[in-house]
Image (cartoon, rainbow, N blue to C red; front, side, top):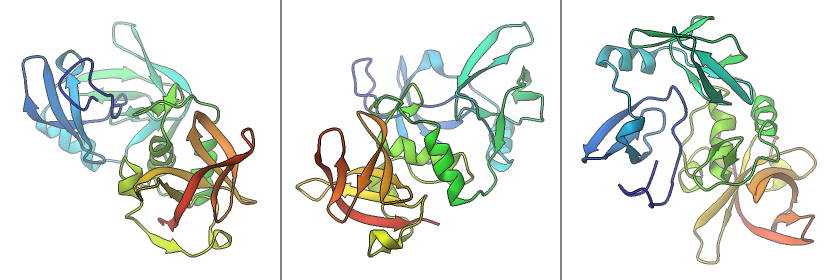
Length: 245
């Protein structure tokens, strides 16, 4: 998803396989879309667009979603063609063997996880699946992910829908006064010199944090912020710790 209808425009997000959206504006080569799961908007190339029926869209919105839970896996079409999908990709209307897109069936036999409500420990365990993934602005996969993409996916794969950006995520939940009050799975938010929220990470045990900065990594956190052990200095200034659920 790009910020503007242009191949050179900034990538602001990624749509993973099986996620559905509404088209809200059309141009010759481009479509502006709004994702159904978090209402995020951006431009995609028409060549990557697949139109589905209204009834199929509604079914996708209402039924329990299943996600691929392997780092990389594949679907098989009726013609025997393999479609690679990454961790966190949706499995539309998955019945334990087949996914359904309109009338087309795709076979899937890999690991999956239903979007049922899970525990905070699951948020942490899922976040660790992205450990060492390279940082990518707008990314949401182990091939490249940004800080809020990491937190959103860790929650999303465990039945908790949160917004895409850190500046949106910070508006949820209740504020904690001290790091000692936080539980593994809570989120810590960080601001810049102007007070804008620019970073987010997942609180771990023993005053540590999982976050995407250069790569998905583990660092120490204190009341001042994140202490990068490799650089030997604080790199992000703590603003708030939030307990979302």
